[in-house]
Image 1 (cartoon, one colour):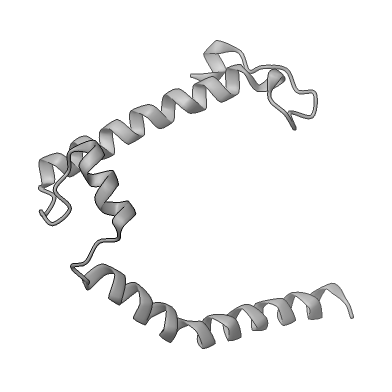
Image 2 (cartoon, rainbow, N blue to C red; image 1 turned 135 degrees about the horizontal axis):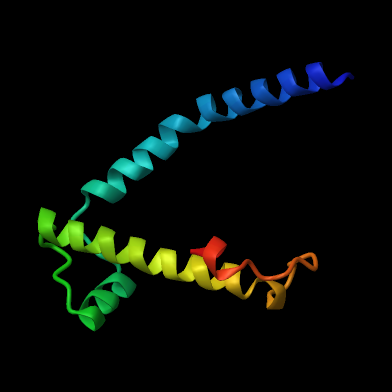
Length: 102
């Protein structure tokens, strides 16, 4: 089998898998997003962080969450690039310079 046929076979297999799984996965996602019940672990986490699990999130709270997540992600990415030579699977690459990491 040549590379082109293998590529088409892989694409066909992916489309077939998606066609077979979209209905059960869609039903599951619809159930999860529309149910009002919370698992015990979820309720414990909500209580721990002080969140009302049944309240809708307002757009200012969502904006703060997105900005905080983005800021923390940038800091982690900067740290990963600066500490690259000390991380496992770095393939021997040196750390990125501060000007390039930022």
